[in-house]
Image (cartoon, rainbow, N blue to C red; front, side, top):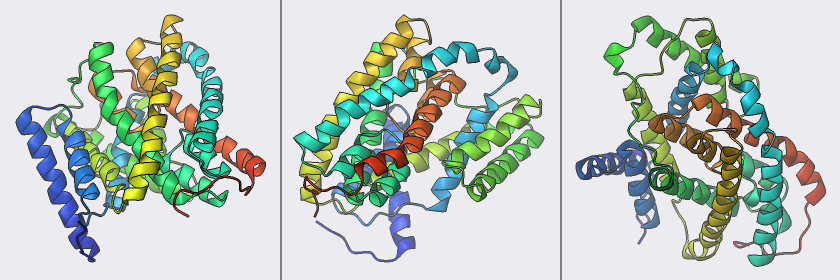
Length: 355
């Protein structure tokens, strides 16, 4: 069943209302992370039913700056004393990415019959937008790539809390921030400035992930200078969760039965392969005492940087450790993309699921 609603603002209003219902429902049932999972589940279900949803554009991007500020505020002088310990586990990341490529590319290429560029960029655990852009430029299928990476993020974000609570004994009850009334007004003002300057400045400089990394860099400088001592208020973190949840669900708007039965199923199967590989690497890191088990899991889980940041906050994990590893992974994947594109070229041989 499909619904027609062409006005963008009306579609966004529908999305907002459904997401808000999701929050209310999750809170009423006492379910975890209602501002993240409520909107995500409601928008996902509505999208699969053909509801006329639409993302919030720059508002969603702006919400991500809150997470950048939160990470930047956690970068303190004490963090630098931990860098030698991080270096050893960071050195594992190139091997981890290589293993993902060895498993993932043949999986999509041989098992599911994707063409070479689509198979490569579907396998790589980079940012959704980056992998779609690079994959499309290399001759891959943009719709398939978008759905595969959206499914990856959706499943990782859904499964991670269960794994954290049942296998790592982590609670999802860590205070996400002080109430806004308890945040000094001058620090709140500095956070707003850091978010805007970092975001827009990062975009002008061509910084990838500018909405998170730009504010993170500016806030880190303020934190190291002793001007910021606290994370963004709890209300701001909840806003970020809300728009992240909406964004994940809205990615499935307009999905066809053919895409659902082929591309999404391929992505689901791949996520379980990735999860097994990530669990193995996290176990090695924890066994070698290179990181706390919970933080090792979050650092190597193949989810999105923003989503893993939220989970790190609610579990009380070391944000610096988790984000540093995700940032390294994303940088290595993005830097390696042009080389991979030149090697893969625009070779055929394989079928594009939606061609």
